[in-house]
Figure 1: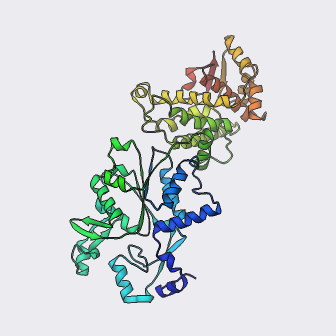
Figure 2: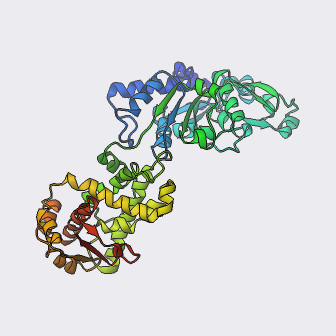
Figure 3: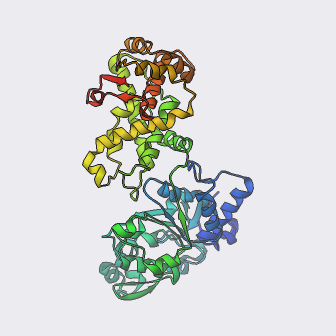
Length: 464
């Protein structure tokens, strides 16, 4: 049974735990997880040999740290998962600053101990409530983060404006005995950053010219995008110098890593099947975009592109199944119909702007199929020979039987599709055959009719 008063707490709760700082607490719990061989940061994929070891070292060293990387690299997710390193709940005095029952820092907490002693009430703070996050913007003020003078408080309590009793506390003091995260640190004005490193190092701050001592127990963690250093601001040198570790994040290094992330995050309608070759092609779109000179690589291509694209691809397959009565199996066609999930997430260079986002996205999708095709052993010679003779293939979108009939006219195509799909089920077979054709287009072995890119996309034409 949890203690409800300070006296009960002293008798039932390990006092040494109350003497720990939040960094000590995280370090101790991390050591226990490492000793038990537990997986750290579940749901984070692709960082096992890069980011996570650096993160573990920073935590063991009891450092404040910053995650530095472009958009969509799970920086915020990592920070939010740090709560798993905290105790399930901790005892505190019922004050604004969640004071340590042994050593309160707020006037309210000190007064409570003086008046009530061992009868002082105790509340229990769950780990989820010990994480406070602020998205930095240029208009964020010192008052938002640290607090401001409250004349009404001062008048009500009969104190001077320079007294802690007269302060309306901001986000950071309210994160006392917890984790305070600042996203996009470079966006903060230099004045606010200076206030941060003052409280980070010396535990004091100036509010409206009054120097105040506030020895908070807070673990400060940050994220930043290198692009913002020049585009919107920078991290002032004194603050950067006081951040223990700068940990670089990155995008998935393999398509398989990307697939794990997208499968974990994306909403996929029940009953809709997304074959492996389609999932790989979805991930390859982001990989191709990250190498395309028409895309601004300093801005990055977020992993959210793959997640959104996978969701819309599945939705496109579901829509086709509902309208046309065909099996709900995703096809390469669905990537072209999901271009809106791509165009909004690409920052284009001047050349890309001239060509237009939709054209750039279509060409990146084509390239993606070409990147994935070599992963499968496809015997393409008879297929290419058919088109080299001047034949043209037009594939309808909704009529499954008619589509398979036309595909059967191409020597070796359905055989290659059957080997790829591992089944003769019509929906999978059509998807696999279409992937083989799109892969050959992406590798510049075949041409794809431009008319097939129009809004209706009822038919697609392939030829030499």
